[in-house]
Image (cartoon, rainbow, N blue to C red):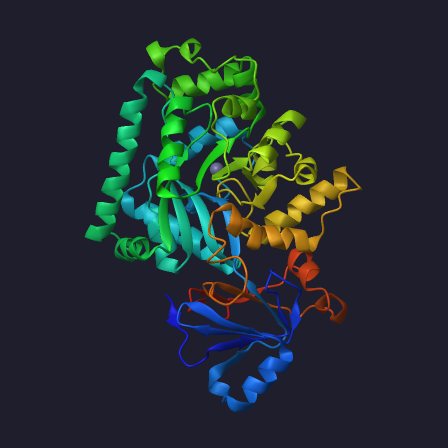
Length: 455
Ligand SMILES: [Zn+2]
């Protein structure tokens, strides 16, 4: 699905947004192999261009050339369940999702994950952090050519069985890698190759504080630390989760009795249920908040939770459209940003949002925040930064991606701005966030993943 760069080593257009400095009008990047060799301003490029034939330059004209977007919370395996149920609240929606997924054959997972990865690419996304039910997301990402951290989900609510749950996860991960190496499904060989070259990395995703006990979460965290990789967890997503940890939630009790093996079959034996704490405080008190955690959703938080997240340098993957769809509430992102919390954006799965466009997610977030707080002071640049350089930092890849600068991978998104007004074309960050401009091309590690992806 990818094409090599060939002779066209220079990409240029109206705007180059390096995201480690100001926009460069008429700038260019030179790509050598998988990486960016040089970033040139208009004058420097003019001097080089004089000596080059047109075969060496891809001139996108009225376009914005920028680092590929990074989506911090996805489940691409569920992409074929788009618009599954647009009215169900979270704990009606999860069982419905599971009923579908449980009937899927392995090839269905691959097909769905590939579909999702393609939607990601078409939205300008070059890298995803995916919470993966069975790991097949890696095959979808590899087939399309995306960079990815695929975090295999982990479940286990019985503290006494922590070692069994953990060993089960390690076995699943090992078997997954073996399945990829055997290459018996579409994309599996590509996944094995991407894992061996490092463009796809496998990590762990303890599902949520109500489905994973603190000691099992600790095993996951320690494993991720040792592997030097980011890990992820759904945290404080719903009012039910908050109520269940703080006091009681009959709805969540009922949910757990339906899907999980409980200690003696009794939710009362879960010691962190009804403990008087918020989900964030529960994790903080168990020393499970750290800078390599990307916490997804984080809707149900108070001011003291926000201070914990800021001081422990946790990144929040903000998913406002999924939070709204699943009746989870609205995360106080304005307060988090003001407190200095690292915030990025995630679309969540296509089964709980409109589309997999992470720019649209950021747009929704900024609209909502301005609606509820007229003093919200974060602008378009700030949103775009959090979709690129900020997100790269959050997932520990800032030395490789997130900005256009020499030595980094040539992970590049090009948006066509030719149909925008002249006023808008002078404001590239606003245009990206609010202008709904179409993607033109996408490059990952110097390979062209999409060409003329106008839609
Ligand atoms: Zn999720």
